[in-house]
Length: 116
Image (cartoon, rainbow, N blue to C red):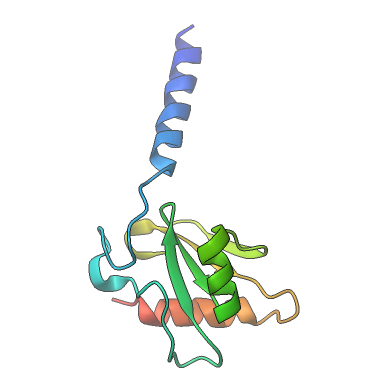
């Protein structure tokens, strides 16, 4: 009986910690370390967008993907990095199935913008 209670309590604690309120990018514990919800002009080729949703940072590489995400809060193909963002936030990076280097470029740009 105690074992069941401990397992249930641990599961509830973990589930409770997974949900956080949506906040605009740049707010919260990470402070100014997070970029704006949509930003351009990076050192990488192409566009760069960051969105914060459901306690995660979504890094996207096209305006089309950014607009789609704003409407649906969904990205079809992603690479998820648990705890790799500012203050241990999960980072979800868009994957382009036709360009294997796409997500590496987005990760490098994310790290450059959020260093320090």
